[in-house]
Picture 1 (cartoon, one colour):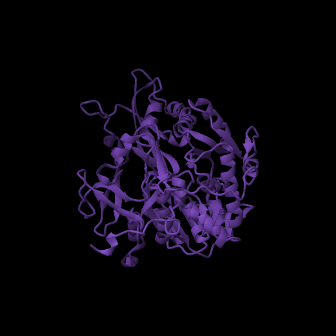
Picture 2 (cartoon, rainbow, N blue to C red):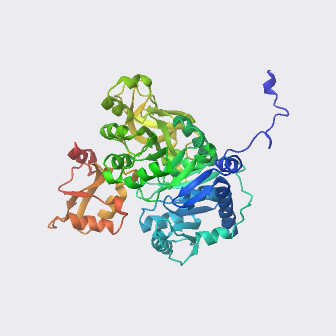
Picture 3 (tube, rainbow, N blue to C red):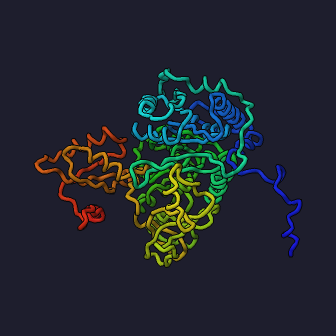
Length: 539
């Protein structure tokens, strides 16, 4: 028996084992990068020392307001400093961060408040009316609401709730953080649309988030002091974990509330932004920007794009503007991006058009992931021939703990020892993956996931509708938008505008159909609507 079999005296202790958590990055940065700029939003500027102190105050104030370890603290915030501070301050008091999509309808927000059992909500003044309406619809105990006014953007304070700065002032800047005793402890709860109308709660742990923050800089070839622009909403997979990552590099987070071409070009030119992530719609925004919105800059900006496969033409066009775009892929269940289109120097000799086609691939696994590949229904590796289809399956530490209060869905997602993405793809001889279709009927519009079942449910409530089906329709701006195919009840008149207006009363605007096609729907012998036939309408 080798000596390593005898583990006597080789135990874990405080000196040799610390549970992994991205909180460690900010604690270190406050010491190592004390006076370096950490957070920027217009005239609002924080050094790492100030950032750490405000995060500590937030953690302290939350604890004083009755938040205990394991409780949920929700946010309804755009990409403003309070949202970045919450990413550290909420887990620093042992709580779980639930960043909610600010574009959701009132009913869904109420469901999330109830399902996640939020104890406190940090809410931007613009979304406070929606927040309070959602609380009125709740079945459980109402959370404490903290209003976050945005003076930089001219969003006035309503003043009915305690404001964020007053809430912070009550906290202790020297508060001792409650770090996880076990890195498996939950750090965030994010809701994602599934094949049912109600969103599922994805629970993530400290270990997975930490490893995302170490794998991403390798893939993005990052060095010290990058300047990152928050285009990816921090309510999307916690902004792909980039806010948690930046302190490890002494980087600067530049907040961007409203995503416009003018704002992006201005941030690059005036703030020296070096990196950002965004859906293909952001690339289109930059390519098609008016001359008056453009600004000159003298450095290459590194861009991660994900959410929907970008058009090769878009990738080819944006490369000439000073942006180096890299396609990545992931899901809420994987903390965001976990594959990359890793570039091969042999491709440098290809034409720009051929390079753009390759850049549209979802690629290969990030360094921190164990295995990501394409498998058949019986969990066998598909031939890597660039033609055979299968499902993208994922294994690694940056995979969710599971779905909150939904063990059946969790077991299904983890069947066979891999997370099942339900995305159908082919795999090329070099191992890189490329999505061919989506097994789920989820429409990805500007990086937002839309459940077709949810939209269908709303539309079926109209008295004139007999049957309906929602499918993705290609859109130059958003990538995909919902299109409704409607079979009317006998004797009812076709009124596209009325049906769209009906859904707008019940759903967030981005979920509503942008077009309605009337006629009898194709069905199977058992009456199931054949969506694949409807998709042929768009080629």
